[in-house]
Length: 258
Image 1 (spheres, helix red, strand yellow):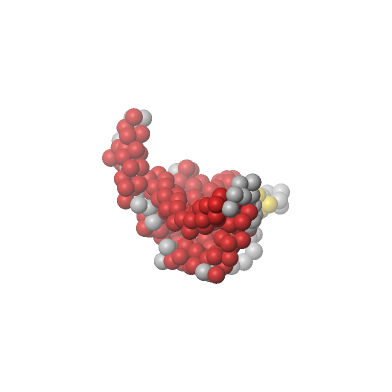
Image 2 (cartoon, helix red, strand yellow):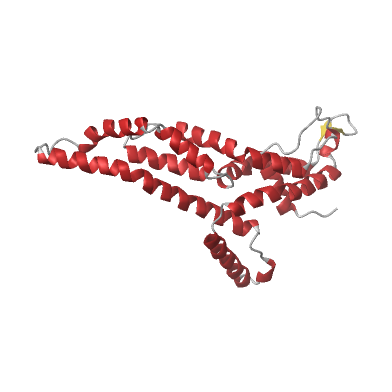
């Protein structure tokens, strides 16, 4: 039986590492060899290893994680709180919001891919084919999500670049479509970064005004040796708390994917 191992590794790695696409109903019973020991299909082992390697990539680059993490990092710089909240907290908040946002997509992928009921067949050759077919069905909701939040100009740009690279390498550029993952994924990531910096610019404006006002007051009072950041930081924190900044920011980040 002939398989496209590149596609098997990529899609199976994403589906296994990013989301629980296949529900297991009982404990897996590996195949038994002639000596009575437990053996496993090498292809399945390769898929599992690929899943472990590509799971962080799928979680970060194919979800809303990039946009949320960048916005929270820009907010920390705008407040001028140095390492507060720390990187672990920012990553944790971004991860929790990503799970919350991606839950409907994951459920739809699981429904499209289906469920493997016979867990004893996971280690057989047929199960590898079933896994590949399920991944082909389950990738459509993910593609729809990426297309929905990838800007048109970025999709056009990467589509043209993909055709140019294919033609330069002697391949047929007509085989590349605008919905290929090689086009959609970089367009989605670029769009997310663009939106994150746009939000960051808006976040910076009120805090920048506070810094300028405090700096002018200190200069007028002749207090040149006192850093304006030390004085403006409490006012920026107070402003952010009074307007329920965390609630507004998180709410709008989530609503951006509704």
